Image 1 (cartoon, rainbow, N blue to C red):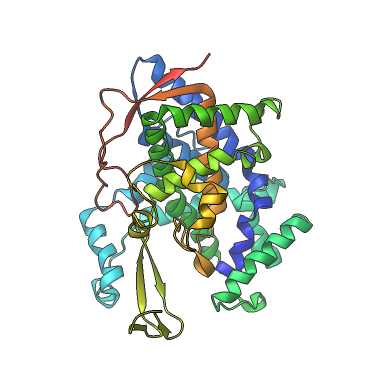
Image 2 (image 1 turned 30 degrees about the horizontal axis):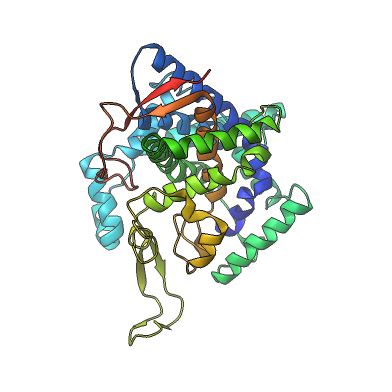
Length: 397
């Protein structure tokens, strides 16, 4: 699947989808406007989760979920069940990790068939509608249908082709099967990938946006500097939020990187050793086939690598400071052949939300804002705040 899908997330493909993400960013501001009109502070995680829902529904399923306008819409109500499992489903999820053989005996699923059927029906209804009516949106649905009918994703242009080529080098390092001609995908495989899009992109992106806004509210000088950069870049682009404009925002990249350093969405990553490896300077050899858990949180909070790790400091990610650190000391998306395939998409989703919010609002703490250190929500699967992060938004003139 990775061999087939890696070309899906090139910069060129994400650029084609950007108009969908950007439309959701505009609706996010409208949603905050309505909240503030009520004279209330904003529960950030809930609001940006609705934004993430609309982005995923639009890009992965080709539908307008309207979660920002209607938090109880069918798509959001169904998807929330994925992230709010019953105790029985949590138990099955643990069996999948620690005793997969026992799960086969238990014969239960960690996600209900109701959700799977909803995903199948929604995805294929959209795909069939497009086929019959000649509709094209250049989103994830279109790309998956291109794989289904043509066998692989086509490059947009020479730059896109070069990026696909570079990405394939990582695949070869991972010793994956790279002869795509005999990889056959069934219909359920395509709907499953749209579902994976939800699982990988929903909770992760909304958590990163929430943590970023929390730190920007607590560090007004950083927020002001970021807003100045955003405004300067947009002034050069006729005040239009474009893919190229966001790519030019270097301080925004630093802020997002520091957010992911302090609050990595996944606290650890797992890898399987492909050959015997002796750890330099030790007597320890990791044998081939051994599963290794790498503590992302432990690396990101190591004071020997990041002094005062509890301090939010985007300056850690200037080109000069990055060059001083060893490789693999910032791995919020993993690294190497198994790096998160949707990294570029996730970053663009986060950056677009921040740009729209900060061009419209000053974000401040309020009496309801939790004080650090923030606890982490148990059984969430990703680093999500334990308490609701409530912030005040002041409209900019």
